[in-house]
Length: 313
Image (cartoon, rainbow, N blue to C red):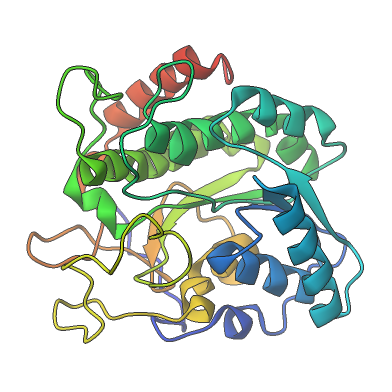
């Protein structure tokens, strides 16, 4: 292991500050979940820097509205929207088929959290299907477009919640054990990191950098819509070592990994607060769990994901 990657930015930095002076003219980006919250701010800042941005949203009306608003706010006309339901394989396939030309930046940002127990028609647990499998199929499906860009970046938004549990390889859909919404969420967020680890290895020769990140604790983005209030572990005061962020601050690490020259050539890593994360220490909700960066787990998850999606063979 070499030295951890660090930048001049930190927990209080905003996405706009991270993007200052960066020119993305001629670059094409997709942001999933770009109609609101962190995704919208990420899309807005990338567009402000000159990128052509496509907002991938489950609800067309929301995606189109966000695209119009961002175009108005930034004065950039190349902001578009596309329909994408990550839990629906046919929707993912349709989005991929509709993409033409190179893709420089893909931000796998969309996600759901702590949902009531639900499964897709094919039997997949909904959080795993949406947060991981849908993004896996999307990203693998766009591999050719990413390769064509010559120096593409994939950014996968994970969470500190991954430290609550690994991928349950023997029972990812909770078919055997009682469903736990937080263990299901943790599994999906661990899967996000493992995907970045393995994709970085497999796609290095294609010039594709793949990194994952923890955006921090941001309440009120819509991610926690299945809860009436923040969980007990949500700590705005920061006494557990993690304080609440604004949406602008939460999007900073995504923008850093998507666009900043400061991380040129960095791949297969997990960032938080605009720095490469240290190892997780029990009792402090920071860092990355060993099982989330284990190469054997990453390879095993890739094989499972190929089996479940039929994409990425």
